[in-house]
Amino acid sequence: DPAAQDPQRAPTHRGEPRSPHTAPLATLADSSVCPEPAPTSGPGVSCEMGSELETAMETLINVFHAHSGKEGDKYKLSKKELKELLQTELSGFLDAQKDADAVDKVMKELDENGDGEVDFQEYVVLVAALTVACNNFFWENS
Image 1: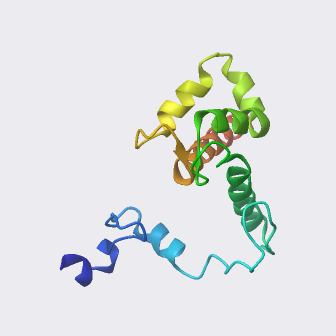
Image 2: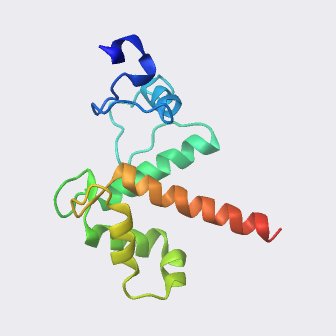
């Protein structure tokens, strides 16, 4: 088995083989970098994450779970849940679109597997893309 001989190609926790491009991230995610949750922790509950970046990660998780699961799978956002998240958490982004179909377009771009819902990984892609765009804007205008 080639995956057994090359830890970089070993399957991820979801069973997909790791690509050479994602191996370092997958290694971090599978390591003890992520703190063990306290028995009472979970979406909407704060667990003592210390640094500014750890707090931001916790916020990403909590915001996703505050909006997911109202219409079905608790680990995914329906189109309605995504719209609610965008309206409450990213209203500046949504207002800047000036497009009545903005949510439909975002949903279509994010829903990589075509299931009509946005999972956590697809949601993080949106947040990361917006973060890069904001960084570029501030860099270019500084």
